[in-house]
Amino acid sequence: MAVIIAVLVLLNSYPLLVSQDLVFRSKETSMSGSVKMIESALAGLEKLTEDNVRQALSGVEENGVSRILVTDTAGRVLYDTRETESARGRYVVFTEVAQALQGNDAFYCGYDSQAFLSRAASPVVFRNQIIGAVCAYEYDTQQAELLRSFQTNLMRISAVIALLVVGLSVLLSHAFTARITNLLQAIRKVREGAYSHRAEVRGGDEIAQIAGEFNSLTDRLQTTEDARRRFVSDASHELKTPLAGIRLLTDSILQTEDIDPRMTREFVGDIGQEADRLSRITEDLLRLTRLDSGAVEEAVAVQVAPVLERVRRMLGMVARDKGVSLSFEASEDAVVLATEDDVHQILYNLIENGIKYSAASGFVHTNVSVDNDWVILQVEDNGVGIADKDLPHVFERFYRVDKNRSRAVGGTGLGLSIVRDTVLRRGGTIEVGHRQSGVGTVFTVRLPRAQGGETA
Ligand code: ADP
Image (cartoon, rainbow, N blue to C red; front, side, top):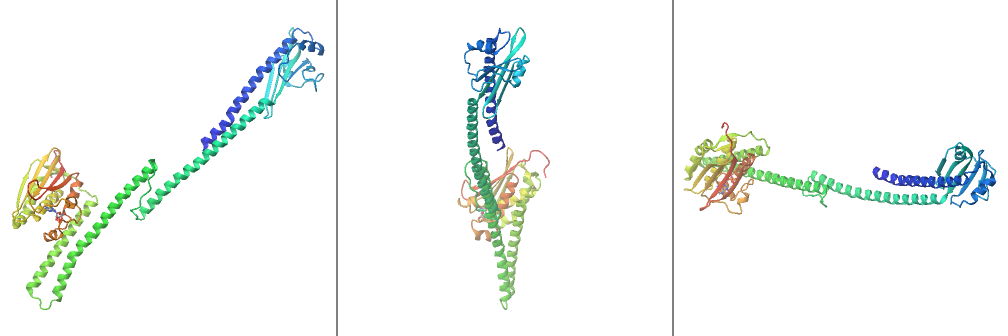
């Protein structure tokens, strides 16, 4: 706004000043010329009198300048081109005439918004003696009128420009604030919990980009919020089931009269199993909460083979009981950047799943190899396999392909989520697929390989 006002003020003053100056200069040239012409017509006269001046100037053509005065050395008018109200015989009081009588050429021009008033005077000299003065006088209203209409036009143009600028500014700022208000409303609604609300995205400018970014942020918030709600409801459900089982079993013991000790032992054994399940679920939940909190233990170089050996010792008995054979192959170069606990968790969960979902006389084969900067852990079984439609979901929390089978084998539906989160935390990847030959499942984990350094 300030810039526009400055430009308009300049537009209204500068051209006028320049035009005024041009008129002053042209007046000076034309009037000085006229004065010089009269002066040269009077050259040769020894003394100026009314008669000899009139005679000398009788041959001089009308030069267009309004009025010419010739005075003697006292400033008394001897000759005046104006017939009516002639100043002949009177004394001239113009400063320019006084200056001319002192031997100097003088010029004055002024503008008073009605007319250009200009005067030029020169001395008349005979043999180095000042014998009088010539004065040209003009009162020009025509040029002043032209300048005035120029000024009026400039002011009109400025007024139109100012109106346009103000109108446009109001419109633009209105549109701008409307869009900001829209965005603010969207932010407030989302802050109050309406995660499905989206800001309106119009155009491709910065505000539209902010609105787009805000919407994608809200998308993520909604996804996270949905996942959180699902998780809380699934977790409550998972915890409720064994608790309800325990309650039912205790009620049965309490309400059955003359209950025989064998049956009581059976019921108490079942209660113990339900308690085990509860403790497995809470342990897994705690582990996931720790992973979610982002508190990551510092990664160190961990050699995989010894950890695998430990898992083999722990699961060997379980596999034998079920008639599943375990086989292992591990490269000594396989050293990953993680913690021992992470590697143990990953291998234990995957191999335990392999055993759980294999039939008797099945096998679970684990292979640990090195591929440039990566260590690859592959766990393969020839168990029940996973259908194509279930493959993308098996890493989701509480997802089970077959609820009853999972429960029967003591699953919590959280094992693969823990594995996936642990792998991602360490900058690795995990994939699941079918075995290439025959039935069964293959899990492939890639973890960053530790380069040199001490192993844990
Ligand atoms: P759970 O505790 O139920 O085993 P997981 O998160 O470990 O939970 O696995 C999720 C689901 O994926 C399981 O319920 C099971 O249906 C399926 N699954 C996991 N590993 C295997 C496997 N090796 N073979 C067949 N199905 C599997």
